[in-house]
Amino acid sequence: VIFFVTWGFMYMKYDGSGDTAGIAQRLAAITVASLMADCSNEASTPATFSAKFHELSDIIIGVLVMNIFDMFFGEESAATQATRMMTDTVTEFQTVFKDYINGKLKHEDLKGKIASIDGKFSELKSTCSTASMEPRFWRMSFNSTLMSNVIDTYKILCNQLLKTSRVLDDDKKMLLDSLPCFNKLRNEIVFPCLDSTTDLVLATIARDQRKIPDLVVAPVKTDGELTVMLVNDLNNLGNVKTQDREGEMHLNPVSRCCAMTTMMQSMVNAMRTLQKDCVSQKLMTG
Image (cartoon, rainbow, N blue to C red; front, side, top):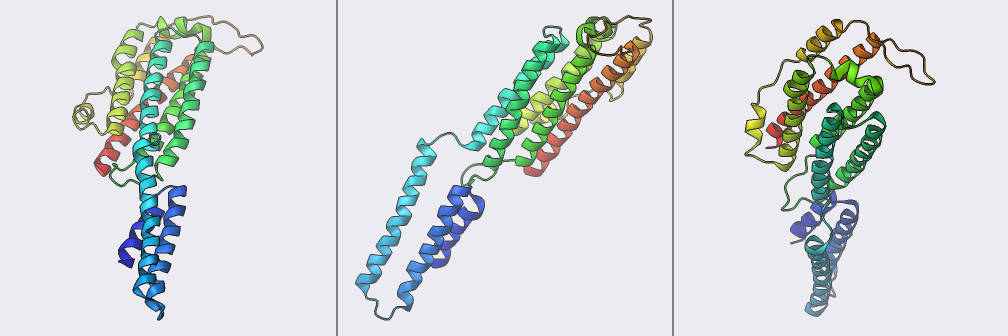
């Protein structure tokens, strides 16, 4: 009896959150002290043993009732909050990314939206830390490694998109939108990669067994095709004159084009790497 009761509380200590672990450790200590005391007390009688046993059982039942009420009537678990926040934030990034590429957002507007998304990912990281310490019991395991990889990758994507916007600024229409390859670049490489990454991330986090196999086998363009398309068109762009920015030194249009090409390819590579991480985490965790 002592072993099994203590084992249950010690499981809660090592697998639970900080508050639960503290309660569980104390209950384990009280359990051992209460049950062992009567074994070593020669003056013990059935009445004293019964009183101590009921005192201990009252404490255990009280804690169990508290936990049951907290589970059913308490706030949403941290794991559920993290999953919901991840879904909303990843979807928001997808919308903002497309709006910028489609010309619906200027640099200043993008800065505000990216700052908001980046802040949500930082908050999400804190929520994931709490979720990883929650007692699982009947709940499915929380994949903190996958969530951390997703958050880190999307924070990099936010930074890269903002840098791309800063490089292009008011010259985006001339340096990117007017290129002959723009529509193909957007519709056949960048947006499909973004959409498949978003779908795979959300399906893996939600453990959607129906969607994941189809997303894993979806065809993708080769890694270097984006760079080749941009470089070929930029080489044929000829001499262009970009606007000088107030308070900044003149930046050669060729330098902007090179930086834009590098960052666009970097974002696509980051998304494809994240897709591979999602698949590998799915294979390891099921």
